[in-house]
Length: 328
Image (cartoon, rainbow, N blue to C red; front, side, top):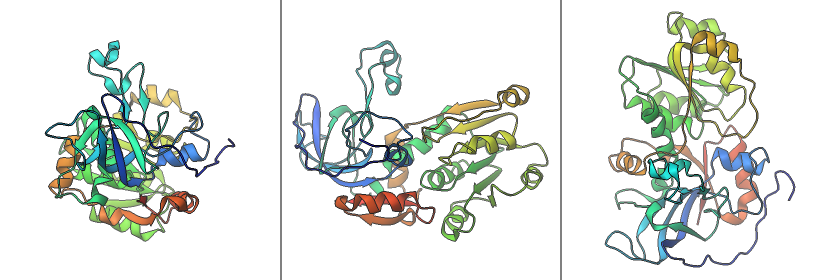
């Protein structure tokens, strides 16, 4: 399989196995990780069905319960852990020594059906629409950065990258009522993203080509307490390191799969903390969607049938699009 090659083909419906459920997929979102895999930058073993932002209904289940039965609307966590290794035993199931990840090294949701462990399932209340439900996984990932490092009302924050994930992150951070919330984009000319960032709570929208001095003025020359790098671009970390304050925190959310040149001397001199984060709390994400605290309708800019995958992925790469989803 060549770099960047995507295939569309008939596969067998997954077999129901002990402890698992088969979902009939209703909606699936294209993530930056999917794009990186399709581009060949994020290395995985072929051939794997992509797709980890999944909403569906239970088609069959090996062990029905009061919560889960045929027809139940669900979203699924993507990390499949063993439950027995030393990391699982201390509560770090997302870092399981035997982990397999749906849509990366285990077949994902860009298919009519997907198999997932019952313990990974979360019920989607009827008050959440199908299209809102497809945002549970990325919203949980956005929430996770606030679990890894405390955000206070006195925090000054810059979010670099206002695409698929960045616009969710802005909304999550706004709920923390920070002192200053700035959005930085390479594509300032694309008005829709900037307008959404403003409506989602950004105090300022800046282009990453703006002089560092102008960014510095916003924080009176100190720099930002927290800088979230969500560009999906290796150059994003350079800007993050430039504008974070001494002893500030850079939150890395990009999973582009490419090597990054990092000025480690500057990290040491500024005493900067670099904090990665990935998958997050599904129940909290579901709660935010249920309480209508997060807007998602405005983020969906294109919908495609699965057999239109080539067009869908091409569009998902375009800065004029935000969220592209497969509609089953």
